[in-house]
Length: 327
Image 1: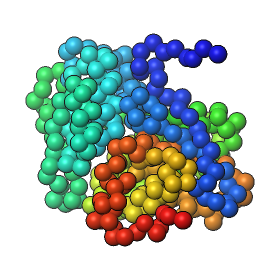
Image 2 (image 1 turned 180 degrees about the horizontal axis):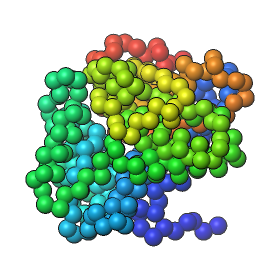
Image 3 (image 1 turned 60 degrees about the vertical axis):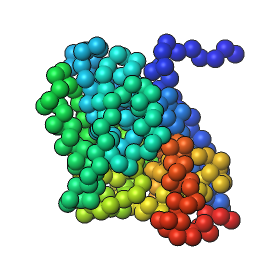
């Protein structure tokens, strides 16, 4: 049977695999399926958001290839997705990242021809970089002619992209999804999935997975080690009605469940994927036997090799904790 042909690399965004996890929760009767978003061409779920936001801006004339300058703040994944999309559409891309952005991501951005500005001072109030990244984006927007910011934190075409994500999950599971677990940062993924479920009339219980030290659900922000979930500023897209439950997980939870996932399922996933599995583990006593649970793995673990998957890094930050995932 011939393989599917796509007109351009952006045609491969979406339609990622859904994989049943048979080994991560031994002895449990719930059925857990993971949406593996690393198979998008830019390596993460943020490809969906980036394409949705820029296609809308192209359609309505807010941006013009060869003329417009895209300016955005990102901790990594959206930056890579936008860099690829901007290269495809001949759009100049200036990305504001921070000191936690990995050398690997910076190298990928530059390979696509993106311009990178690194914010290395933390916000005095929150101890995080995000407020200063957003401040720098506003300054650049005021300085650069023909600048346009997709603003993933407030753009409704961010969650709009993930109505499709949820449709793919529901279709793959023949319409039955009892629980959905999704990490939150911009709130785009979870809000879009919840919007689809509501429109489809499905009774899926949506569980938001947030980081300890995140400000999204009205907690005081504190410094966090692992990027990709949580936020030090509550995003404009945040809609508390989108989630039935909220579970907070710590950095060590992310490490432990990422390590268990690769050890038991041979899936190398990113920090927010570990967070989602930690949340499922906390929630399992409340899940009815035989329930169908979907979880979203936003990215792969290849960009976390020097942190989550580095024994030295883990020992430096948490001590000797390997007993938590071995065995």
